Structures are given as structure tokens and as C-alpha cells.
Amino acid sequence: MTARRLKASLRGWGGVGAMTLALAVTAVFALLLPLSSARGDGSTGTGGQGVGQGIQAKADTCTKPQDQSPAPSSDESGTTIKAIKERGYLSVGVDQNSYRWGYRDPNNTEKGSDLEGFDIDLAHEIAREILSDPKAVRFRAVPTNQRIPAIKSGKVDMVVRTMTITCTRLKDVAFSAPYFLTGQQVLAPKTSGIKGYDNTLAGKRICSAAGSTAYDKLSADKKAGALISSADITTTVPNQLDCLVRLQLGQVDAVVTDGALAASQAAQDPTVELKGKPFSDDYYGVAMKLGADDLVRRVNQVLVDYRKSGGWQASYTKWLSATLKADSPSSTPPTAHYK
Image (cartoon, rainbow, N blue to C red; front, side, top):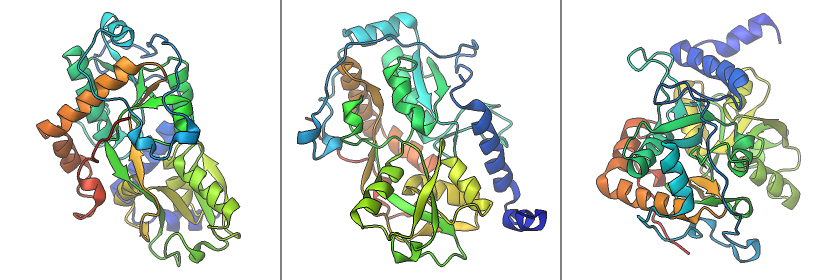
């Protein structure tokens, strides 16, 4: 790519483009590196004791993965929660590069380098209810393709990172009831001829994050013939934000990701936009270790309380309402059903 072309592709970003590049650089150097503790003690945040293994839902009977979580409970006598209380903090895997979900705002001089966003608010709320202190949480940066390994290895107690509940993932981790509803969507330049998830993707290079629901959908649809055969889906990246950077540099023609994430990325870069309607229903859940039913039930109770108190709606209004349409199905928390 010539310098002139690169300059043209970046023209018009202003502050939001600078933030995008700053976040991308952060992503390169921070993959799997511990973040600073919200308590200010410099901990690596790698705590988290192992728990017994169990199966939350069998794949052959899983038709509605978002409804497979156990009923809420305020009981804190289980071994997983006891270990967290004895330790004194919650270890949470998050993103630090997703605008308005989990990110560090380089323009925010008041709060310094604190993480902020919709998922970060939820993590603080879980810590507040379980440990009576919203700051009793240590964050660990986890790339998209390392979310499940981080949970299974015990590096984190849970992952709060725009993680879609699926039947396949239920084989490896346990999920809370859903806390957000979105759907897969196409993100492309406004000047592109791409209209949505249709034949206008013919011959186009599509980027998705490795280990993401988007890639699974693209791969399955390509095999089933539901996605036009000439679409190139070979470009995958560790973190979803890297797809936006590749799109901006002209290395790919489109990105497929959750619509809520794509809307936030469109807010960063006004030269791109969502194309077409969502073509799936994706429910985000808090992911935890298999067998940690006491923690899963307790988090489900936190979600019940968070909705009733208005905390969920307040966080949505603060972080996401500006990028999602008023009639978006994401504007209210999804109804929870339990197994």
C-alpha cells in the first residue's frame, strides 16, 4: 500500500481514528497481559481457584443455550464463592479495546487509565454484591480466542466480555442467564457496494475474530451454501478490533461481528456503517468454570437485582444508547429463563 493510499484511507478520522489506532496498538502489546488492579495494588489478577468439573448442558439436548443456566440464588456458602471471599477480590477477564464495552479512553484525563464501559459496569456490580465493594475486582485482558482457556485454566473466575452463549461453548464453560441481546451484522465502508449478508459479499474479503460466534457462523454458512461461495472468510484475528483496523487500511472489504459491537465501531469511525439487518440472535452471558454452580447461581441473582434496580438500564443509556437505534432489541435486558 502506498503512503498516499494509506493517508486517504485514514482521512477524516480525527480523534476517533486516533483512539482506534491507540486501542489497536494496546491490543498488540497487551494480549494476555494482566491489567492493573482496580484496587490499585498492582496485582496481576491471576487469582482463581479451581473447581470440580461438570456438564451444564448436553449438546444433543441443547436447543436454546441461553435458557440453560441454573436458577438465581443469594446463597454464598458454596466452595467457589467462599474461595473468592477468602481471597478478597474477583478476577475477571475483560476486553480493553472494545469502545463503550471495555476500553481505556485515551481522552479521559479525569479517571486516568481506568477501564470503562458496559461490561466493566457489570463486573463492578458483581463485585459489589458478592464482596460488598465494587472495586474489589482485578481485571485481566483476554483476547477473543483466549476467553475459554482463561476460564478453564483458572486464570480468571469469570469472563465478562461480549461473549455469546452457544451450545458448543456450554461443553467447556458455564454461563449465566443472558444479560444482552444482539445479532451478527456486516460492517463495511459507507461507499461500499455491500448491502448486507447477501450476494453483495461475492468476491469480498471478510474479517472476523478467531474463536468468535461470527467466524463460526461464516464457516457454517459457507459449508452449507448459505453464504455465497466466492466470499473469502480466511482473514481471522485474535481481537475483533483488529478487523476494524484492517478494514480501515483496505486489507479487507467487510467485517462480520455482533451488531452492538459493530455499532460502537461505527461510532469510532464515521466512514463505516452497518449494512443490512442482523441475521442471528446472540445472547451475551457471563462465562464461568464448569461445576461452579454456586457462583453461576449467585451471578444470576446479581443480574436479577441489576435489572430491577435500574442499574442495567442506566449503564445502557450511558454507554450504548447513542450508537443503537431507539427500537433496537438490545435496548432492554433479555428475559431470563432457567433450566
